[in-house]
Image 1: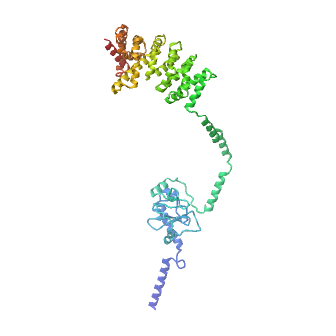
Image 2: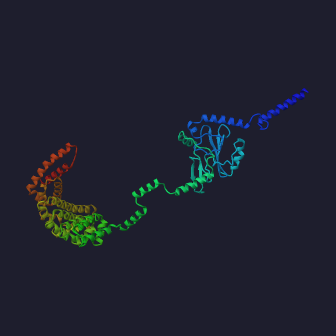
Image 3: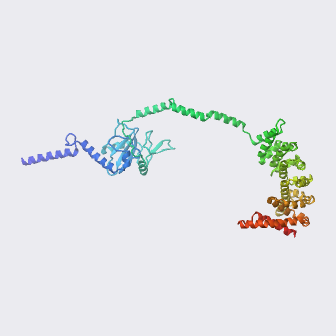
Length: 527
């Protein structure tokens, strides 16, 4: 009996141990669910203590199904995997030290709860094999479902599908650190369902079409008061496009206004003033010539109104400048004769200034016009102009013109010598301009020397330059003019003092030093 009793006791002990170890609900001495819950709570409490305080402000893991919080990461807990299955995203929170702790599914669907037991994960996740498994480095096609905040989203240009990838671990931590403290997330999955979201979207669309509130109406009224409607602006711009004119059209309109007998004097002057702005451009000046506007302006030099003559000459001077085609047509159209007539007759000083400007623009770099100028007695006209009282300003401009004409011919000769093109048409035209002999005959050697008495330094500079250019032609006259020698000696003493003052001020070879050098050169040549 003793052996039999011992065998029975051993059998009872074995059954008891088997039931306890398997925690069968019918035979176990403790409630397995409570035991598992307490054990899990202890693990979560320990993990929560290890989390950063800012993590606890944002997310608290639990056993409930939850929306995936943005920036999920903390301690040893990571997002291990994400897959799309039956229109839902499944996320498993993986602990590197043990089995998965918590799982979420979104959008929430209590009708299809996910298994929590670790032993059931392999069989459940195997059903996602047909979908793209996301391990934190690959891209997933979400299939129209919502994605966690902070995820990377891109459009696959080859497939046309939208793909998503969660942030890297470091970016997750940065996102989590940047979350606002004291603000907890509402993770109650019972708050919204898919139907609630659809209803909210419908109400949102309806709300956008509802009548604006009084505040919105007041704001819209203020905007309407401050800004014009786009339709009105478009209409105004369309009208502006109709009246836009080209430079050619503007010049035609200005010439018509100037040439109209019904236009007042003020309107004619305004038209010429505006026209001068456009003819500065070479193409516009040639366009003015093409439709006959240049001849109309030239004829304006015959007007009995001094202002019309003045502004007509102003327009011609701008059109002649460095424009050979216009210069040729102007000479053929009688502009040179008309300009000389105005300079030779009694006219206001302002009118003569503009006429002299037009004459200089016509003669420079145009040897044919220079020939006609000498033939028409232009040097006599300029000599009379210089000798008039109160025309010192014009005298300086005349001397500058003569210097330019003389040096222009000298440069043409020098260029032909260097290039060995002695038979060029340009050189032949300049050789037909007998300017230096004409200057000597007309007495410009004496006239130029007497202009050194002008008080302005700029005027003296230009006279000294002209004296140097005429030195080869007028040397004997300069030797026989004692007044010139006395004037040069006086200027030498004056500019020696001014040049010394420049040196004291730290300016080497300044303006007065150059004038002194010109005076010394002339005195050296005249000894």
